[in-house]
Amino acid sequence: MKKFKAGLFVKVLLAIAGGALLGLVAPDVVVRILKTLNVLFAQLLKFIIPLLILGLVTPAIANVGKNAGKMLLVVIGIAYLSTIFSGFFAHLCSSNAFPHYLQAGELSSEALSAREFQPYFDLKIPPVCDILTALLLSFMLGIGIIATGSSPLKKAFEDFGAIVKLTIEKVIIPMLPWYVFTMICEMGARGVLAVVLGSGFKIILTGVVLTVLYLVIQYCIAGAVAGKNPFKCLWNMLPAYLTAFSICSSSAAIPVTSSCTRKNGIPDDIVDFTIPLCSTVHMCGSTIKLAVSAIAVAYLTGTPLPFAVYAHFVLMQGIAAVAAPGVMGGVLMASVGLLESIMGFTPDQTALVMTLYLALDGYGPACNVTGDGAIALVINRFFNKKTTLA
Picture 1 (tube, rainbow, N blue to C red):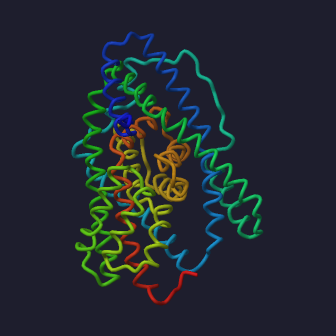
Picture 2: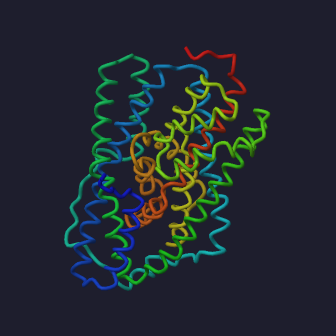
Picture 3: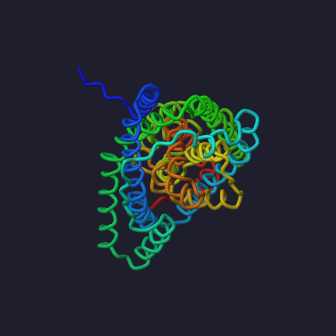
């Protein structure tokens, strides 16, 4: 018999349950030890995120030049616009919805200060550079590789990216449930866990509803452009949605997404070009999930979130999400540094966003891959029988 291996979703649920129970009975010394581990992991995250961007975004940009063409640029442009628009859609809806069922400032610093736990020591691990520097450097290097045709430099960054991917997959991702466990345990000891879990269910449900609404909007637009019934096309994509929901990966669902897209009358050459590319650059569902979680945490902690700051975050997050393909939880890993560098979140707030993001991971990738089918409808309308994929 094959050995049962729990997925990340199951592990996070177990971490939440275990942390909640331990937080109720653990003595202060245990909570402080877990707080120390929590702080150390947060420092490790700060260190690895700029490297992830440098190692994954740089070769991704360089690879654009390899097969550069009109269709490629149009697909990337539509995918990026869809990704950032999803972030603004999430802001519009959640900002108006949360005041009806969440209490502002419920997790403010004043509310949490009644009982604080300090780590036994705080080991600083300074990152090589900050997030924005890493993004700018990735663009400079990626475009420079295209312009100079430097194969050795491109190969070097691809190898560096492979090392970063391995570190994320073998070290960071396996440690995430423990990170959640330490945070939930501390919340239980502070006496605020009931608020977090009660609000968390409402936040996650909000995210699920918004992704479904966003898909309806996408297909209404794509259907109007392509001259097809949007709801029939959306129904044909249901197997892809369910597959990505269950395996929590856009890339792994490519075969099913491609098959569903063909049912909408899209020819093989368009499907084979658009769907794999969109699985790399189209992250609308993951963006909604991250945005809803971040907006909710800001609201619950009483943190001001000016629209200009949020817009800056969404525009940069859409670029950082390019680093996500092939890395489990990649969108979260690529974007988490922006929460602190742009939105001014504390490590505790960032940890809470990560917990909400991971608590039901599947609905983000499910929206991503289903939305890929809508982009394929638009591309087919303008490029079918007009452009050859040489």
